[in-house]
Amino acid sequence: MNAIDELANVEAIVASARDAQKDYEINGSQERYDTAAQAAAWAIMEPSRNKELAELAVQTTGLGNVADKIIKNHRKTLGLMRDIADAKTFGVISDDRATGITEIARPIGVIGSVVPSTNPAATPANNIINALKCGNAIVLSPSPKGVKCCERLIEHIHAEFDKIGENKNLVQMVPAPGSKEKTQRLLEIADLVAVTGSQNNVKRAYTCGTPAVAVGAGNVSVIIDETADLSAAAQKIAASKTFDNATSCSSENAIVVVDEIFEAFMSEIKKFGGSLVGDEKSIVSKLWPDGHLNKDVIAQDADKMLTALGLEDEVSEGTKFIIVETKGIGSDHPLSGEKLSRVLALYRAKDFNEAVEITAKIQAHQGAGHSVGLHSTLDERAHALALQIPTCRIIVNQAHCFATGGAFNNGMPFSLSMGCGSWGGNSIDDNLHWKHFMQSTKIVRVIADNEPEVSDIFGQYWQRAGK
Image 1 (spheres, rainbow, N blue to C red):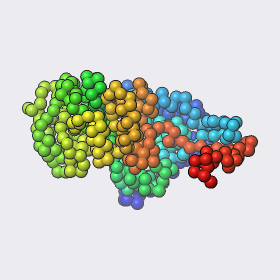
Image 2 (image 1 turned 45 degrees about the vertical axis):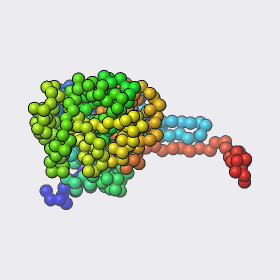
Image 3 (image 1 turned 45 degrees about the horizontal axis):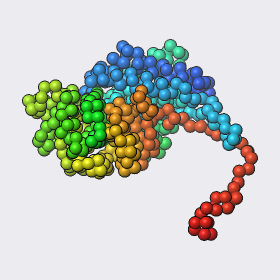
Image 4 (image 1 turned 135 degrees about the horizontal axis):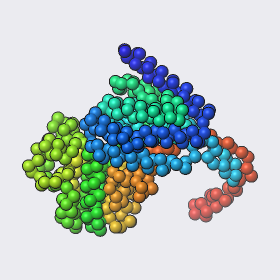
C-alpha cells in the first residue's frame, strides 16, 4: 500500500468511527455509555487477559516487567471505574434555578489518541474508557513497539462489545505499521486529540489544528527533610523507583536530601535495595554511550541494568536500583534529567531552603509542571513548595509513581497522563480524566435583573485612591 492509500485508510477508519459515534449519541443513554465503558474495562481487567496483555507488552516493547504491569492494568482501571461510576455524562447534568442555566452533556465526537510504548495497554484502556463514558468514539495510534499489545486490547474490547451488542467501530486503531504520517493525519481529522508520550508527539498535537489535550515530560524530584520518617520515605521511594522498572513518568529521578539527616537516610535507603555508586562520569558515559539513553538500561530489571552499566561486581547483593551523587543540573549534566531506569540522582542540600532551590533548578531544566515530592512532617513546607516550584502537584509522604496518577488513599483522579499546565506547555494542569472527554450545551434563561450600582463596585477603591 502506497502512502496515499495508507492515509486514505486512516480517513476511512475515522469516517467509520464518526458514523458509529453519531448512532451512539443519537441513540445514547447513561446506561449505554456506562455499559460500554464497563465492557472496555473488563476487557483489560479480566485476569487471564490482563496477564496476557502484560506479557505481550514486555515481550514486544522490552520495557518494564510483567508482574508490575498486571498490577498497573488492574489498579489503574479499577480506580478509573470508581472515579466515573456516578459521573453524569448524558442528558441534563445540572439545572440551576438561580442562574437560569441548564447544562446538557454532549460528546466531543471522535477522539484521536496517541499512546506510548511504556504503558501499551493501561494508557489506551484509560482513554478508551473515558471516551466511551462520555459518548465518543476513539481511534488509537500506538507507538510502533506497542502495536501488537494495542491490537490485542482492542480484540478483547470487541469481544466484550459482542456480548452487549455494541458497535465495534467505536473503538479502532490506525493499522500497522505505524508511521508519523498516519498519526499526523489522525490528529488532523479527529475532533479532539489526547496525546501521551514523546514531547515530539505532544508538540505535533498542539500544532495539528485540532483541539488537543496533551501532557508534559516527567522528571520527578523528591525532597527528604530533617523531619521526615526516614524509613518510611526510603521504603516508598524504593518501591516507586523500581515499580515496572521505572517506566512511569512519575518515577523518582532525583532525591534531594538535607544535610542533617543525610547519612541516616542513606543508611535507610540501602536497606530497601538502593546502592550508592561513586564514579559519576563513568556512570554517565555508560548510561548515555552515544548521547542517547542506553537501551540495555532503559526500563530493565536490576540485574540487566547492573550488567549494562558494568556494576554487577561493585554493588551489594540485593541491589534493586543505584544512586549516583551529583551537583550538576542542566543539559550538560544528564543525570539531572529523566532516566527511565533504575538510576536515581542524589543531591545534597544544607537545609530545606537550599533543597527547594535545587529542586526548582531541576524542574526548570526538565519536568516543569509535572510533579515534585516531599517527605516531611511539616505541612507548611508543602505550601512553600507549592508557591516556589513550577509544578502542578506536590506529592507529600507518598510513593510518587503510585500517588501522582491517582491512588485509593489520595484524591487525585486515576490517570496515566498528567497535565503540566503552562509550565510544561500543556493546556491542562490536572490529571487527564473523563471531564476532558466531554463538552456541554447551556440553556440560558432570563432571570431577575442583577445589575449593581457603580458605587457598589468601586466605593472602597474610591476611598483608597480617589475618583
